[in-house]
Image (cartoon, rainbow, N blue to C red; front, side):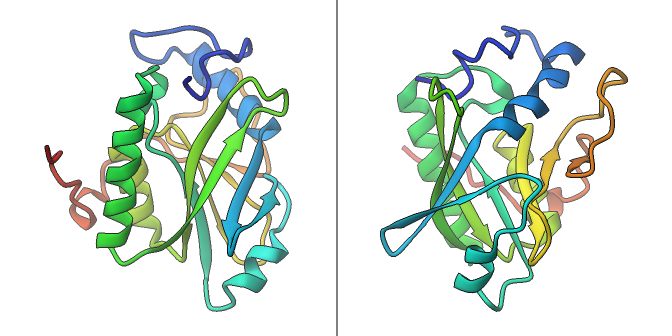
Amino acid sequence: MSALANDPAIPDTSEGLADSHIAALPAVFMAADYKWELDGVWSSIRIGEPAPELDAAFPDARRFGMTAAANPGQIIRADADNRSSDRAMQQALTRLGLTHRPAFVAAHSRIWKAYNWLVIDPDETIFDALTRDYGQIGSLLWLRGQPVRLRMRAQRPGSVAEHAHIDWIGDDASGDAAWAKPSASP
């Protein structure tokens, strides 16, 4: 099942993302539960709060990111397609030499869950290009010791108030030269 398909807070749209759809996403992402794994132990992080367990586990990291490859552009895809994209993202992270750990995000109500990757010490430009190339509207990216931040790859709709822990970065393609998504392999 897709990550956000059953969340009533998200309007159904298959022809691009309307402002109303984008406006609904931050509340859904902010309310979700985020988990990451290290040595078989799952730990939580929350948007707007520091992540001291993560800082302690990776003391040399300057920043952290969390992203997925499923349902690009919030368009619901078959589970097999999402798993294929997830494997491709994992291979890309490895190829780029980025340390990464399994992670996931789930609705607090448990009506959806999405597999993610926690990326340790990513370059911001490469991370943004990676999330863009895999069609992710929302991801997490924050500096060590600072509160976790939601990073929205869209323009902030006028109906959405600014928030201390949300970065609206638009859909700029300036990082495309820093990362080249490999073509799908059979």
